[in-house]
Length: 206
Image 1 (cartoon, rainbow, N blue to C red):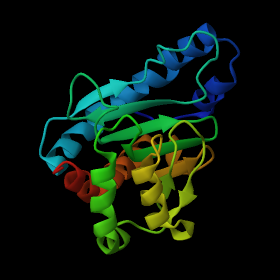
Image 2: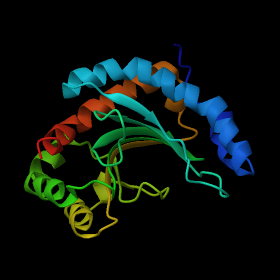
Image 3: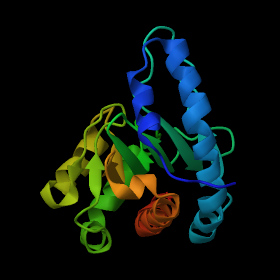
Image 4: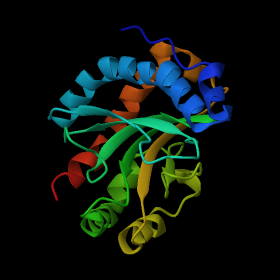
């Protein structure tokens, strides 16, 4: 399946009024692109992590009134669900595209994973480039560059706060040329997954 990148109309989806109307646009414009990306990047991801990975596309099923402000696809070893496991995400807000290794609040072994990452802090700093980002809440369109983030403090919050989360990876502005170029974006997704994979592999040992 061919993937030509995300265009202006894809991001404008999040300005459409009405739950049904916006969901229809997400399903028609964005989700087919998530599936196309999956076909192109999943074989590489499976080779990197050494296990079968399954695609999950956000259904936003719990929403009854307010339309989603973002949407995403997730890659997880578990076929039935991803929220309780370390997983990779690719998704959109109205103004940016994100590529995350995600540990969200449903994860049952948050404290153990956070402790392991805290012990491996120097290795993490040496592995992850400074231009990568960290997010502490997947439900907010907020993230900080690693260069200006206290990683230890972020991990302590992830460890101790019940709703604490830890997402690490890249974000690209809606106007970044790479977002529009399917080949370059796929290459960047693969590279991002490869870069954060040591953290994934470490957390999967717990």
